[in-house]
Length: 396
Image (cartoon, rainbow, N blue to C red; front, side, top):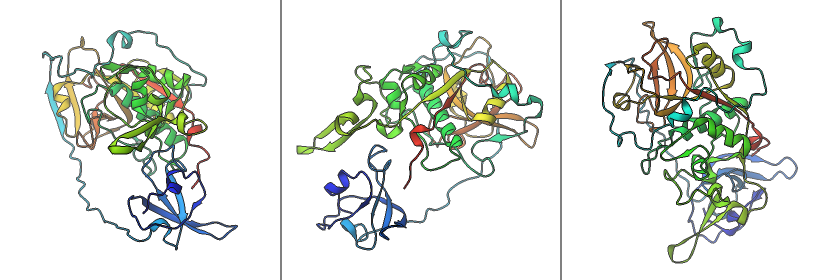
């Protein structure tokens, strides 16, 4: 279609106008409708300019009149099913002693001093799930990727693209917040996602050299985290951690001679950019399986620290277990979203990593439960209860 000024500055309603015949932009048509009062018909289209543009990234455009050339050249494709079944492989590795090169885990560390503190900052306003759920009658399996056939998970990510960045602490926490919003809203449109880059830019817990999950929840409680398209992931620290309006939410336009003109959201638009707030947050008891399960089942995924080994880096499927020394703390953070038991009786946790969908089981993994061979994954888990205000009252 034509990228007209009307499209650039669209804020709502049905877009209409005449085309100059210059097809220089591509959007995705996702549906259609008709206004009750006027009877005007329209297409529903998805743009690629972020959630701060239009109706959270979507717009309506007149149907049947080839408005701005939108009906003149449309393409489609039917994807080929290339999915593969996940084999129930078991990794049998014992690592009692090994040397970790600092370069291997550079930027992926979680601050040990903070993690080992017995008391962390918490804001708890309501009864905890372990107080009202009978831990002896928890289901044998739970998986937020399929609860009554519904997947509540947000997007999988790769924290190391386009460059290496140890943002696991932010990724696992951000995905847990987004997933809980999807759960609270019963998976209603749109799928939630918060900006990890804004978290890094504001030093809300750390940097590309490591950080703390609980600090992300605290920052979301105090300041609110911008939605993902306010600041797309750049996989790097800012030159200066200033947490300016531009570092939180921005938009760019083409300038002369191939240069870009970028502004903070507040410089270009009226009102506030959408932010996700946390209403309460806290830390679960160490190695308390029933408390972890109750929290996951009642309110959604949680962020947990673990010790990532060279062998875990090579994980490709099945239920993972590895024997490591008790002196090893934790150096990586992931998301826990469920649990289960194999046909052979092996209990496991279901986790989501942030190393891309080609790692593990499409970005997810299973790791043994009920023993000491799960890389300390139950030793430090945090949770937060998000507000859904940023995503409420959105209609197409």
